[in-house]
Image (cartoon, rainbow, N blue to C red):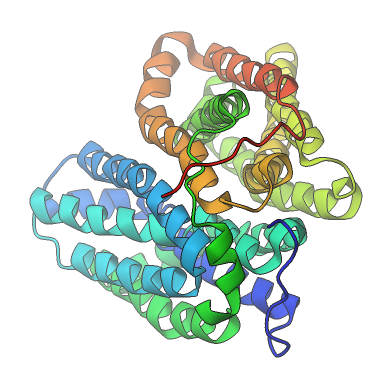
Length: 399
């Protein structure tokens, strides 16, 4: 059943989007974006190398990848209110465990809990929840929550840095835990419809969809994995790459700061201009922007560092939406949570490995490593070119 399922009258669409967008901002800010600021003080406090902290973070992304299909299938059957509310509790527990860590074992255990929380509460789960509520009409709400959560790094990095300097990294983790419990948890419980309202979708999701239709699933899984590798690589290495291109440290940081506004600007453009186009069109445009930026940087050097950051940020902003809207448009709402969990599992796995793998390229190649990431984006564009907008949907087997 692909038709929209109206939420309770008291819960407006904008109320749902605002609640989910706020909780997503907090979830991303207190998990995915945390190591960029806290890795150094955590490592210094525990007497370990910084790479151990990022190793624990990579492990959490792999745990998230393994759990995502099961989480998505559960949301298909039962709705997402309970899952997302649980994510706020699990993220808080992981943050408190991290605050209490006294060595590598507790560090890895805390990030394992945070990995489970990310599987329960980041975009995949939120997009699946919106699809159980709105069916095929979920594209607008998906764009809406990415507009709000696009500021997660803008919130996380300055706030985490200020808190760490004022009260230390352990108390900073405790503050983020408190925000998940005090703000996200009640918002999600109040704003999202109860499972009883979604009984018709539970019946529709009683069959497993798996990797069918296989051709489109594999093509999209590759495209998402290739672009998520680039995302993971850029998050870890962008300032250093810009310095290798000739920018000063201040110029590199200033240019990298343009990514956030570029992401949000691209999402606004998708909402206002591209929403009438098929999501595959937005995805194909998005995969061309990083290669265009890399070409400009290669030709113009430091004069192109700002355009490169803007083009990369805009492409990444559109791709975030595409990961939610393309499967909905291609396969429909039935089994959406399971499908997106399967499609994004390989992407999360390669994203976890991207900082280390791309770092091995940056050392010998310098800024020329961008041609590798640009090539991956272009290969994703080719894969998307073979995806049919509405493939035949074979009957699914029983659970």
